[in-house]
Image (cartoon, rainbow, N blue to C red; front, side):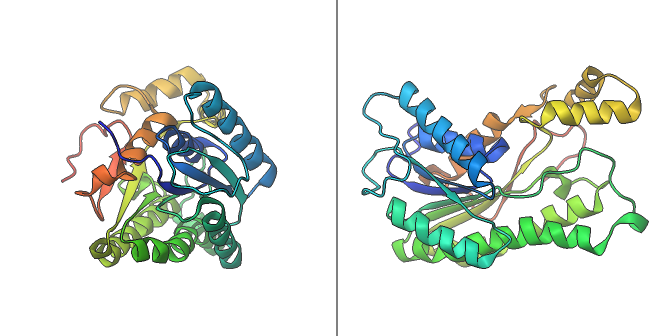
Length: 287
């Protein structure tokens, strides 16, 4: 299936690692010009440079990947650019959006993935949840996503087409982490409100809920959980795998496949909805 993404232009936040990096790779592989955004300038530049070289080596059939090149976008050439920004700061987000438009010639797709990673340790109980812990999550994941959409959606509306995909998480459907559930449910509610407002203008907005996902953080997370419980990391990994309908953890690349479809013109039938990408939760029926 041709996803009809060649020549589109995307901003992906949280793109220096994990799911964000996998999404940037997948989109660029489909011919999308990608602005990779993250707070750490050094790690972001390293990721963008590596991805640019990877794509150039693997797709040498006329695709060009040029960091920092502001030549015309939308010509079918896949390119990767790095734009450091802090999504907890509105001025930084607006400067990032302006820079992305300058480098790419416009932005058709926004994938919001910049958020504080979920804790690998046990969730805090009610008595131990602090105001600041919740504020930090809302500031980065909820308001951060809002800021990026607010800065980039007007251009999509003006052109009559766009896609916004918000990466949230299955804590929106699972109890056990008050802070994790609140931040992810809030992203879902924000997504639906955006979708109802922007959908009639050709801009679809969706939310993706990954579960435990294999990224570069996974070995450390498994080791930490194992140490807390006095078991092996393999035993913890097996427990996570048994909790999924496919019998294993989903990878960041597999989540990125879902996001890439939602970012494409082919996804027009999906707007305002949540798409789970955790390998299927055993037991409960979600409808």
